[in-house]
Image (cartoon, rainbow, N blue to C red; front, side, top):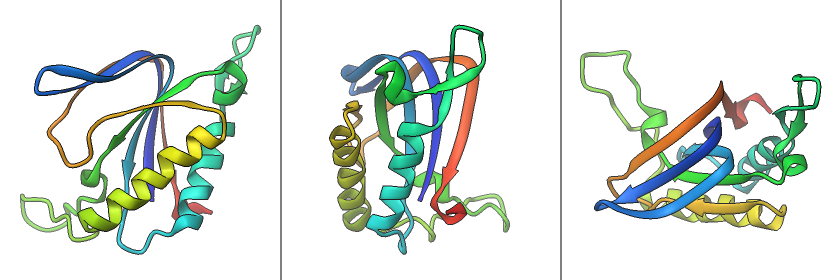
Length: 148
């Protein structure tokens, strides 16, 4: 499981020009799921995302977690994180999980964030989405469950 997180001042996601998810202060999480990801992968990524100290303290040092700042998450499913671009000019997405499998783990990911006390807004799984954000820092980090 790969999740690209971006620390944001604000973010929103639109489907068919309608805002369906919006947050202030927090993280945008672009969530990619591969075919061999498990609940353990989800748990690892959620724990890392919630407790990673990437928000600034009163001295301007990244020393505070999402949970500490009571930030929100805008969670966006992103199968393209598993693009293989090694051959040719068209990416292969064979490493991305099937939509049925990915949607189940994506739902668990969001539920576990909520259980951790995080306010979560989402895009719409499998839809074409427009994501707008103001990256704060900028801070952009990749969390990969294979690193566990």
